[in-house]
Amino acid sequence: MNLINAPEAPDAIGPYSHAVELKGLIFCSGQIPLDPETMKLVEGGIEEQTHQVFSNIRAVLSEAGSGLNHVMKTTIFLHDMNDFPAVNQIYADAFGEHKPARSTIEVSALPLGSLIEIECIAVEASRNDSPSNEDSGSPGKPSA
Image (cartoon, rainbow, N blue to C red):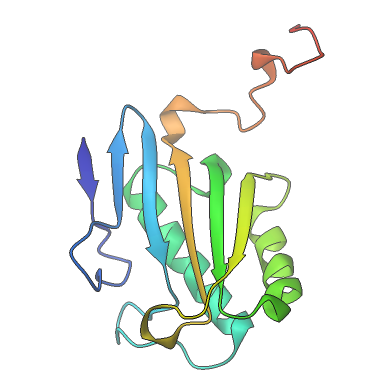
């Protein structure tokens, strides 16, 4: 098991690592919209906060030898589900054609008064060179 702490991401605000890697799987702790230089929430609303969260996630995944195109599952925590459409658009832009599994949950509060937190599970890039995994087949469809 490897503990991952990314120098380009904000310092953890508690006793945890940015991510843990085991056998090529990367379990990322939730990221909130902290600016890594100031350790304060970015100014603005849900759009600015969501962009910062993705910046922080990219930094953690990069340190772990992965990237957004290797994310298998995300969990989004929103303080207000009315922010979902704006978050969903930024999420779609960030992932492009890659569409990991996802859950979105409204919560009563998030650390430091954040409006959003996202956690994810990814695979190391070297273990998943093709996000589509075309050779794996799928239920109801024979493998080529």
